Length: 419
Ligand code: ADP
Ligand code: ASP
Ligand code: MG
Image (cartoon, rainbow, N blue to C red; front, side):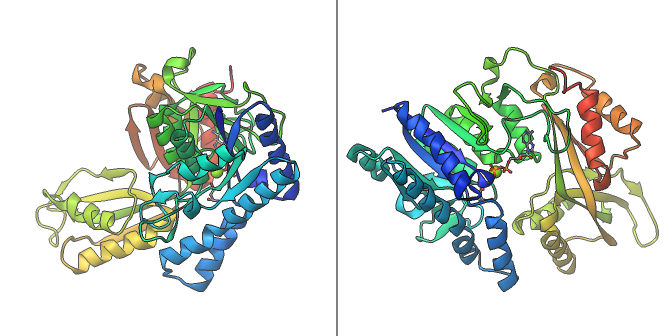
């Protein structure tokens, strides 16, 4: 039997009516002759509520209990979806992560897949079941504890199942009808893309476009999963939505294909650090150990004999990290200073920044993208605080209040609204 994976996000299962609507989409595929693995998220808002319960109970919570609590949202929707399908006369049952079992690492709240044995679900399909409804976002650790995969992790569950079960396609049903040139909530001129290359989607996702979890795109690329993003609110067929695929499958390609942004950024500067070999390691080593995801880094040019207190060469080091890791970063740096591992006069934290990025595989072969980006931002009076680049993206850190303006200006500058 050919098999499809269909994933429904939070807004697509937000209430009983929406679950019924999603179940009808599953029914259509069953009638077309597919066995279906349905991956569900928690009802929208539910995971945030559960995270709030945990944080309201314990500040420095035990991550194993955090996972036990926040994974429960998906258990509810999996059961409800199976019940709805049964009501429609479709043989279906729900599966929680441990029942499959979805084996993951023990990295609670950020677990990674280790294996997804097919035997249990395959046996049920053989018995005549048509649909396996699997709770997304969760798994089980080697110790037998419930784990979760990080926010947005149901996308990754869906792709992992598509790979493990050699599905014909992995369809991600959500509240937009595809991947756009930028978040349609921020720019009314955003345009839906027919296709997007894995590499571009990977950059967009990791730079803040939450339409797909980054890890899901990585897995799809590695296991050659045909991945599609489409609307759960509209009538859809096999040509709907956006296909995430190899770049060879895409005929026309612009130099820049999308603009991504992330609000949840912070900038940290260490003033007057020594400029000598080993200093960067002394700073970023403790940050890594503390689990801080450092993103952009800039080091100022060195000053000799800055003042009497600083003989020799000194410089400043600035880096960015997710805003919710600022406290951890601060503690790691202060502890390293107390332990005599690093010296600095001041630690300055700016939590009013955002990151805006342009992404496109065309950048590999085109010069002038950075110049165009910087001039578009300058024309709007937006000051750039930190810049970082890779082969196919340029990111800037700016004041958060200019984020929307910057996204719109860049969308216009690269004519992304034009087909
Ligand atoms: P789900 O609950 O279905 O997983 P998410 O909220 O995680 O849905 O992801 C869908 C949202 O991603 C959209 O509502 C949209 O606001 C946002 N988004 C950000 N960037 C993009 C983009 N480039 N294209 C489409 N949607 C985007
Ligand atoms: N419910 C989880 C979250 O909100 C996982 C997901 O929806 O993908 O992050
Ligand atoms: Mg999501």
